[in-house]
Amino acid sequence: MSADPPRFPFCASAALAEGRHLKLKMMFEAREEECLLIRFHGQCYAYINRCVHMPRPLDCEQDLVFDPTGLYLRCSMHGIVYTPETGVSVSALCEGERLRAVSAYEENGEVGIADWRVSAILSAA
Image (tube, rainbow, N blue to C red; front, side, top):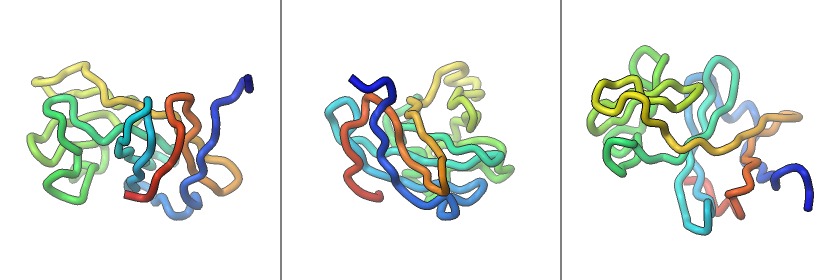
């Protein structure tokens, strides 16, 4: 068995702008899930697109995942707020709970997923 998780390239680095997100569908732990790829302070992060407060996508009511300040991720339904670097909620209602992180990588001008729990990228969402 390889020491490194399988890599699934998704897009060119330039396609994921600072403070923006892209979505992809993937097989995660043997079920189809939607994943958010975000860029924050130059780094790429990935999370399952599901709020911890209610099982709804963060962008279920608006095509945005960053709050107006650009400093936090925010669920468009009830306003639960998360730190982009860790996915930890800083809202009183769900304080300390976390978005489900997925391991992302950026290398040689490419952004993708490199996580043992992922078996395939199905499509851009």
